[in-house]
Image 1 (cartoon, rainbow, N blue to C red):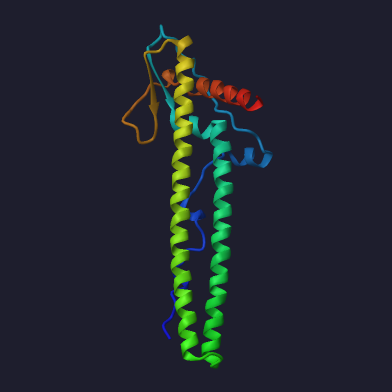
Image 2 (cartoon, helix red, strand yellow; image 1 turned 90 degrees about the vertical axis):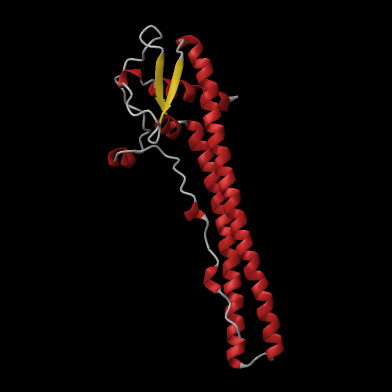
Length: 205
């Protein structure tokens, strides 16, 4: 009897998506459960000081309250899909073990065993397709979440800049083409305070 590829089916999709929904904290802050607030002594430049400023997008998105909320929702959905897939695989493994036991003890005819094996082969293929479907679904959900966050930031900066009057607000990230930026032009803390206040107010409505 042909062996079913029992261990080929991934039993979890959580490893495919590592969601960082908490701010980076020091060990002392984690122990005390403190909320991390970006520390800065930088004077926020005005339009008269310089018409080009920047935000650290990595820090901004990581500490944006919308990021934490959406990432939490995404993680909960991921756990449900992962649990469903794991449960289905356990049932499949039990069916395979039952088939192997009956084959070893001669409790079914060869025709019946062949029929059972064929059915399990179909179930295995279905599990593989389901696993891939869940993986693609989570990838799409994550992409949509990231677009929502960036769009919210861009929308806020339009309002923010009506008062500030900058000509350019650049986004500085680890892999950005900005190789050096003067820290005095960093408005990340100011934008983060404002966008989080706006988000809190919207959530209360």
